[in-house]
Length: 282
Image (cartoon, rainbow, N blue to C red; front, side):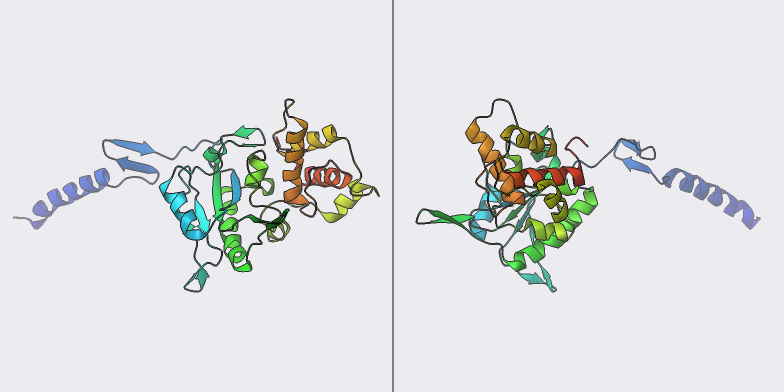
């Protein structure tokens, strides 16, 4: 018998097997169906659009317990003194980035609500503040903690294309409820490292136009600027609520004075930010 007569059927079977078992690139075989992923929609974009910075208002262990065993959660938790692993600071991921975490609560930024749906939340171990007499004394963030936060935040904004103006404080998106991460969080330093927004000093001086920084300005016009940048401003706001919102803006961008008064320096900072980053709808 010709050996080829034996080999030929085997080659045919092998060819059939290969043709039916090799899946083309971009075609994913699932159980009971097949998905063609080769035609991606142009309008697709990442779910994550905002990075929110929080503080825990407590120590690490009880904060970890709260964030893992209760209704609230966050994607990441950073200790005040992160331990080292292979020479790098260790951070705790509590919720996969692909999943929603309950960290923002009732919130608003640049026309969007339900920011839990579109944000990643980072909690920093920090007690917040303590009362000393009649004064509120804020607790600074240790350099080691910031050294862990920086590469994590850089990685997140690069992967999702998060804009500088969308790296925000919890107090930016919920000013009536929250004050974290407070006036001692180093926003300017973080922006200088490429994470978050900060106005250029020369443009602030330009818009200040030789006015005294504390000179009072039209509150309604300042609120219009803050609304354009991203804050929630509504006609129903009381004077107290307006002051709280202005204070949240100042705590982020002018932490030396966050009493919530509408002054010339705050107006100039808002103008410089809008010039640099555009309005929230941009």
